[in-house]
Length: 278
Image (cartoon, rainbow, N blue to C red; front, side):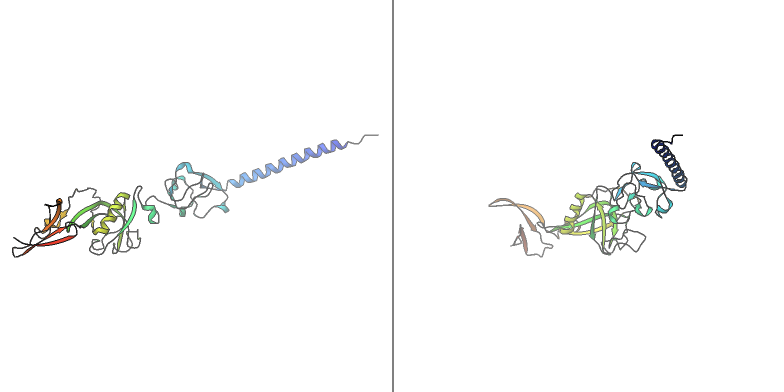
């Protein structure tokens, strides 16, 4: 009487058949996926986290295949379309890079993207006279003149305090030179922090006026400023030094504007003394 195969043999055969089935299934799925990947769209993705408002470098991006139904409508497909651009929002690794999320350096929307490195944006008030007749537009270069009054000498001095300054925006933050007219209420300029302090002090202490520079004019002109006495000799007080009981004290003596004047006004700090003319 023939022996029936043992349970161990049946189990072994079942395992072998199962492995063969799994292998065939794997190969089928792999081939199917491989065939499908031929139809995938290659797009540019972030290979690492990219911070917002930063320039994208080559080592931060790569090309990767994406199933067509997962590709963003405005996804970038070329490295050169992304490298060197500004990321408007934060990107995480494996995120698709979209054209709507990029901007060219210096052309990004929003004033913050247009401020040159090492400088700050600061606004000053202008009107039709101080702002060169509303001719100043974003992208222009300007010089700024300040007229200050010496509190001791009670004398005005006018001098150019800033030159070759870039205008970032005019009026209510308008940065496009092609839209609307020129500045009528304010201009926003880019200056180093230390110049911003100087400009703010001059704005508080005196009056500012803006000069529009010619296109591509880069020269910086050394100026000494002009005092009121140089424009109107004899009309303003002249600073001198006299000696009294306390020693030498700088005072301001106001000379008479004409021979008919009968008195001389002498100023010491904030006090005023009138003495008869000799």
